[in-house]
Amino acid sequence: MTGFIIKRLVSAALTILVVSALTFSIAFLAGDPAIAIAGKDSSAADIARVREHYGFDRPVAVQYGEWLGKALTGDFGQSYHYQQSVADMLAARLPITLGLGLAAIVFALAIAVPLGVAAAARPASLVDRMALALSVLGQAMPTFWLALLLVVFFGLNLRWLPISGNTTWKHFIMPTIALGFFALPALLRITRAGTIDALRADYVRTARAKGLGPAKILFRHALRNVMIPLVSISAVQLGALLSGSIVVEQIFALQGIGALSYDATLRADLPIVQAITLIVAVFYVLLTLVADIANAILDPRIRENW
Image (cartoon, rainbow, N blue to C red; front, side):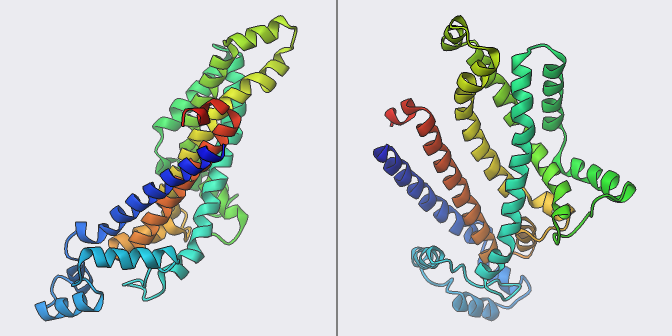
């Protein structure tokens, strides 16, 4: 197990290194960053001063090494537009996005797992058809459209929930539902399909032959194998929720990193865009790493293949 973890840590570190290089290159893919900062109408002298001030006149490799070294210590520089420390801005906004993402994945799992298991236990039943219909609906409905429906119905018509801000837990109910509904179809399909496959396996037939009841077979044997793909897809979905919360944060006026990245992109505020891209990518890699380790614990065959 130790060897497996070391190999996965090395793989994760190399992935993060590649992602950091791609993240740093954002500043140069869109053109000359000095022109973006100084403005298109600036003179050549002004652009040259900006290029010298921010160090854009140095070799790219030197710039990348300096940027990466500072990023490893949590220093992402200063915002071009806000003239504030990027690290301080992220520290204030990151907990909002993380809390929203975790709440959304918990909401999705709380619906997908019980409904998927119930649908697999009774194929072609009403519950199964409801699960499939919900999966199709969740796949087809855009997140922004569901968010707007929730705002109109629960916020404006019924006035049960606040429609903007992040001061109380009630402000996160509708954003959690809107964002969690995005992850629901994949989790529901994985749970249903995995449970059906597990119930058809030979070891389940053996358990039935030994006289074990349906509940014990389902929860003690079948669900253990379902957990392996479910853990993996949950990690991937959580990463997707963190990176895809921009629309939801904009609609509900949540001051998370999603809204910040949107504003920074419009203003070509490269330090913020680079920092958010790198942080989300690191979270994605770490979530995948944790999922792989958890699956290796659940199924020893996984670590034997490494």
